[in-house]
Amino acid sequence: MFSFFRKKPADPPDAVMRTAPTSAEPASAPSGGGRPRSALEWLNADVGELLFGKKPPDASPGDEAVAEPSAPAPMPASMPVATAPEPLPPEDRKDWLAKLRTGLRKTGSNIAQALVGATLDDAMYEDLEAALLQADAGVAATRHLLDDMQRRVTRAELRDPGAVRGLLVDCLADLLAPLEKPLVIGEHVPTVIMVVGVNGAGKTTSVGKLARHLVDANQKVLLAAADTFRAAAREQLLAWAERAEPGGDSLDTVAPSGGAKRIEIVSQEGGDPAGVTFDAVVAGRARGCDVVIADTAGRLATQAHLMEELKKIRRTIGKAEPGTPHEVLLVIDGNTGQNALAQAQAFDAALQLTGLIITKLDGTAKGGVLAAIALWSRERSYAGGAVMPVYFIGVGEKLEDLQTFGAREFAQALLS
Image (cartoon, rainbow, N blue to C red; front, side):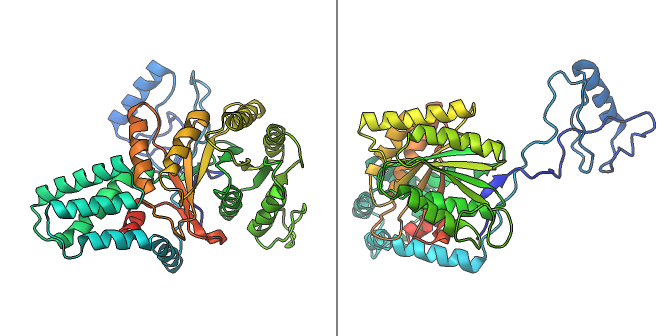
């Protein structure tokens, strides 16, 4: 298992602020080592100090980071540094991708049948259109993919129908590419995440798996059991937290190995969900937790009074810690077809979503709805919003079955 996150290390290797040279430091030997500066670079630095009251950052590696009190608007001494996710062992990723292909096999076989023995004519495009619609891609996304593919066929002057599948993979991968984005942890401490979705989408299960991945990334996690009225909701979250705790089978103060517990829970049976999330955020800050995750009750996007409860929770989190929640994640059941797009649109309008988790791509899921979500996300960005990333997709019940979303991997699995 591996970390899926970009996180801020305690001591970033490359500082964003540098020491100013003294008269004893020659231009050819900057303090702390690194690339020698030319006379022109020192001149530019002196001009910058004269105009702005501070030295500009030096791009040379190895300089020591220090605060500059003379700056009118000083930057923090350390900034979040993006770290590449540690790769999953190839054999494990290969096994996971095999599960994904198995879950999407029906869709892939339908599309393959549309291309078998076909010629590059209108009949082939019509068969391919029907296959994509059956895969839950939706009318708009299907039209977008076919138009894009026809342009590529014309540009490449293709005559071989066997190459069409490869072009379709490229079209889908390009459409999905903006959704491929890592979940950033460490820019805020604690990072507060609110998880929402309809009943049965797999919210609590996803929270438990997400907690495990965070623990694997050396993060201390606090879970808020904000689904206070569903029978056994707290117990379900507790069970997942126990599974997620490395080597632990309970949520005591001390882990069985003797080390501090990495996952804690704040809950209140039958209490106010907003109150539970408020207490959790406050407790997470007081206990030095890196991440606080609020598991909320299932809400039907079509029921206004239920959505108002989620809005209240969101506002309450912001009162406990201004500027939070940093992430509002919607969990979507991959089997719901075009209804998944409707859910994303409704929850986004109410809560301003920041990302998605797609679950249950291991059974009858068709998967084409991600193309529809990607097209909506693109239109959302054109209207001034942000692209809606898909942080994770799930293909089973095991902890390791929740993995990061890869656009080309998914396109290849869907069209295999």
